[in-house]
Length: 443
Image (cartoon, rainbow, N blue to C red):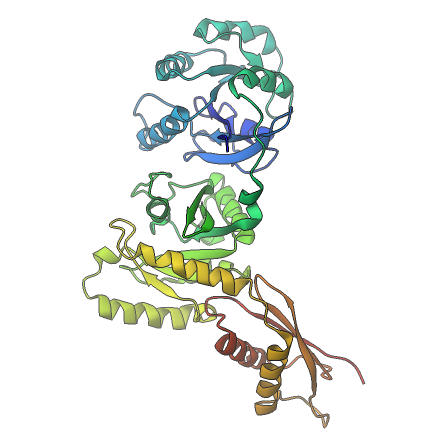
């Protein structure tokens, strides 16, 4: 199978790279904000070519060649790694600002890497911008393509300029469809090691890692295959409570993190194993459980713990007290820094994915639920004897069950928990939320 062509979008900060990325991929995958430097990691998505076939589009962080910001070296290394694997590079320029020395530096830098570059002048819908477009030809990369990424103007002309560098159209492999992927969201509060864990899982430095909290803003996804299972890992921004979230990019980051959480099959909830579980960790894990995602509690930074037996007991106690809803979720103690314990995640994730999509045979389901009902019937007001007619599984991911009864009102939530525990014990739904609904009928 031929390799899918790759287009990388580069440019200095705040020229509209993420807006163009979203336009080409017809998505809202990348964060867009007026503040420069919102994008830091590589964001990747597929796009349809106008003539048929697909290409991979890569959005990179704002490219600066001077170390004037703490993230600049990290962003530049991510961008350079993407550029070296590209079939074509789109150098996005700000038509409103005109050519500036930073644009010339980036042009020379790209020329030295020896990749095909298509210069593109953005914001061509604004007054006077298109008239000044020829000024960018002085960069020595050829005649630029004027576009408006925000309004879609000039996108067809951009595709025409890119086509000579992309080769024959590439059709997607049916066996590699998204339906065969296990989508894993890595979530947690800021600075617990989510990006370090993703890099360790995939075996490459794929996302920015810094001791500074809040390094990750966009959700970054990476696809890999392990033991015959195809995984799509999504590293999300650190989630904090609304009251502790600043306005602007951080708010958008949390919104994007929760959006990707809703699309995931399972979640790795990363906590700081050395510091223990906080109320904020429970808050983040609650998002995963409410969304119905299979969940693993990952205690990271285990290399910093001295008395590990005592720390295990403390964390288990904290989970039972602060995260009672996830008390059945498995826990893995590891160090993303050293890699110790990370290998235990893959078989665990494969088992959780099977449980998350498991469908129980109707005969076994009704036998178990009727036994649990007879042994402990629900308490109801009045003289009417509670009766269970039958039970049916009405969905998966998460598993959902409906009990059809003669009850006119819902029993206490503790009774639903009793039924959930019976189902979990019999059919092995550890780490998977279960939804049990009581369907009543009137006299």
